[in-house]
Image 1 (cartoon, rainbow, N blue to C red):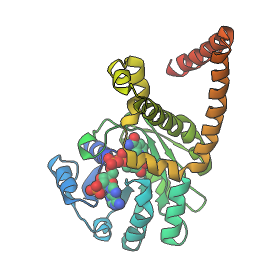
Image 2 (image 1 turned 90 degrees about the vertical axis):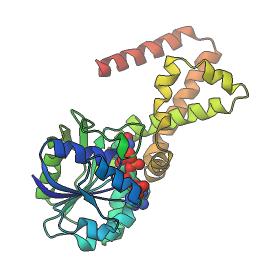
Image 3 (image 1 turned 30 degrees about the vertical axis):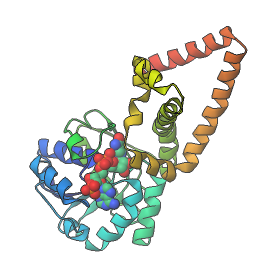
Length: 285
Ligand code: NAP
């Protein structure tokens, strides 16, 4: 049971967490904090938070659990503002989509990584943003990855694990660098490809016609290009090294695929498509 939860950044991810914990009866009071009062008032009106503060230090005072759910580029400033004001029993976690950058932000803000900080990342989301998009079921049966480091207090990790489990999530632990490589492959590269494809087609002279006749496949493939540009800019900057590695693999393989098309090599194309279909059917299965 969390006595007082403070959510810094009551958007899709932070708002959904607050909703899920409330529904589970796992939290006493929920305090929200972000930059804009109209967003926070909307969160109160929707019943996502009980009250709000616009000053971060005031918002975390007396909280036993603090969740930082702001864009990656804002993490360091948030940790700088909250760390001197935390209660003695407070545990802090985040939801950032890349972990090495968050560790660097925390380290810079707090002069080292504190024992009370448990890095986390829910593998759940949507292409919509803001508290209006939040919903209590978001984490049901979804994975949450925690990346505690040597100095992390194991009791703090247990409290964060329990919080996510109360939301219906399945929690696992991973090394920071491994997390960033896995997510570069499974999430960051696909988002970059979706944005890139839509942009390429939008730059064609006859792009109106292209979009007019866009069929289901195009919609499926590019759905995630409707995601928040701020968030994805921050992810590309934060996880640059792992993302570049995956982009290089993909560019190399796309060049091979191009050669097959150019050479009219039906056999090679059939083999590749069969292999990929079988992989996808397997993991969807
Ligand atoms: P979101 O819906 O846009 O919410 C972001 C929240 O942060 C808003 O409440 C915003 O409120 C606040 N905020 C923005 N900049 C801030 C700043 N400088 N200081 C204080 N508050 C600030 O975004 P989200 O999708 O929930 O993403 C939040 C985090 O979750 C990101 O780090 C992202 O990497 C991670 N994540 C996202 C997904 C996903 O699919 N969306 C999945 C997993 C993890 P104000 O405008 O009022 O400040």
